[in-house]
Length: 380
Ligand SMILES: Cc1ncc(COP(=O)(O)O)c(C=O)c1O
Image 1 (cartoon, rainbow, N blue to C red):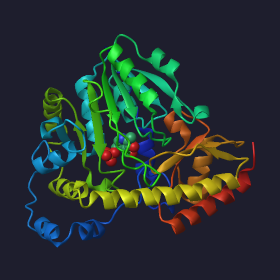
Image 2 (image 1 turned 180 degrees about the horizontal axis):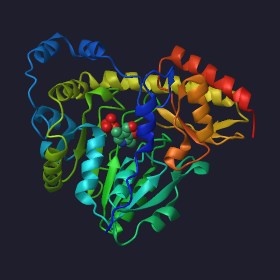
Image 3 (image 1 turned 90 degrees about the vertical axis):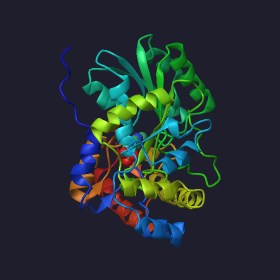
Image 4 (image 1 turned 180 degrees about the vertical axis):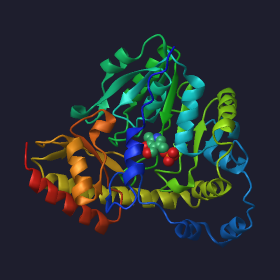
């Protein structure tokens, strides 16, 4: 079977081409990154000294045991043998697709979504079927579209929960429907949970993992989003042990291992003393940023609207404008030096993904410039 022509990951292409040197970067999907000095201040002198004494060797190829144990502790019933540490959630998703899918298979994925698995699968010759989150229902799952997207030959279902780009968290009824659909056809369920911990409400419980709710669940996590540490390039997969073995064999081809420093610092971030401080900071940035965006959107009520996100560093704003969201984002970039990904990159035209978990003065100045362009464009 001939493979389809290669399609680029357009969202990541937009970021890597334009994010350097832009005045206002509202396209990154995480919170304002944490500085090393803050992380180490929270960790204390003993940890700082032990890092100084670290040999910059390869770490354990499947992930240092101490880190795998800390990760496993967050997934009830999992042990370190259920964990593979990867180069970000990106490598995790990549090797999962490579290991579990083949040309001619079917993948069912939520839409809108972070389109990595989608694009990898398409490039492999896998048929991709979408099931929808419905904006008019507060981005709840459309159960009919789920039934239509999952067939007897579907090999994998993929969700991002909490969701990128909407910031929505699946309700327990929606989660149950997704598990039942996977179970009905004996498919894997890949739950990309990189935003768990990044809930907006101060005391919201952390979004529960799908792990443990069905025997073919794979949970993916990362230090990039809820922890504000994308530069560590450290992610993980939690899966049944036999699958971890198979993934580990792929990981040796793709990356050999992650980085020693990335893993040591991830250990610090996931430690019981430091983690609550990081999560508290993350949630503060998310709350403060969205409050400002909400006011901004309300102030442009004839041009923009938004369903409030429950989690993540961003929201998915609907545009009511005489131009497409792609054209708006292009003008924002070229005329105002503001980077925002348009909904077209999520197969959801007339939207933009706006990242706002950023320092208040930076966000205010960028929103001011955004207003200038909106005044020029006018209403639909
Ligand atoms: C849902 C989702 N999964 C995976 C990734 C990749 O993250 P990482 O930095 O861990 O590779 C991203 C990054 O934006 C994401 O939003």
